[in-house]
Length: 325
Image 1 (cartoon, rainbow, N blue to C red):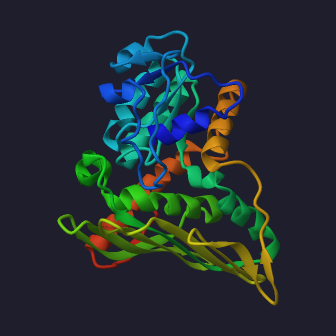
Image 2: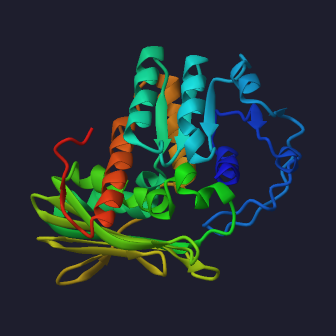
Image 3: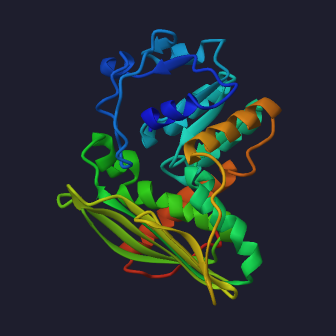
């Protein structure tokens, strides 16, 4: 994600890349050809001659010319790095998942409040045009009656830490947190959750079919890692309302409302990653908390994902969300 964010930062007006930090000398040299990730975007060579290159986080945080840090570190490092950065007076954008558990996420939020710095989690789906279109269309179509979100990919061959649940939370936790966060964004906190699925690390399988129970009915989130190798990345949604059903698939079906007629939704805005960074910069400049992507909801997404994984272990037994957050 560091490479993805780097490309996006180039398009953010008024933001200057002051430094890069890595313990990988190849990356610090500007050779990012080995960094791709699930999206399949090709790596590249980058000229870092005009920016500072740091090998230790404390050197980054001690640099008075740096106002904000964008943490694209492995998930298990998020809490400590974010807390150190906030205490050093930096604003912080941290990749999703916000942390490995709710207590760690809440600790980050508390430190941000004490230091008066901006803390935001990069839940980029909130900025993807296809999902922005969904959010904007919902109020005009009446009551929600059901929702379905799916996200799948092959078990990644990159990032050894990602395959260690102690460091990443596991494939389902890392992947479906996008869709759980979208449910929080659109529908709020559920009343209960349940889930079934399968985990087999050797086969590269980590799947989940989860249900989030709301007063209107059920929002389904499902998917995960589908073996190792060639399985393509895909995401999709379907939301049924009194006035029609909205569907989208990254496999070639744009966001469309289906009722008596078929109507494509307008897609507005820039690339989701650019829009996300622009919004973070705007919050830092104005001193306004990121209400479009509030850290309290990012923390709830972490807790909900943990609850879904517990529900999977209990073979679908429903778990109430009364103690959530």
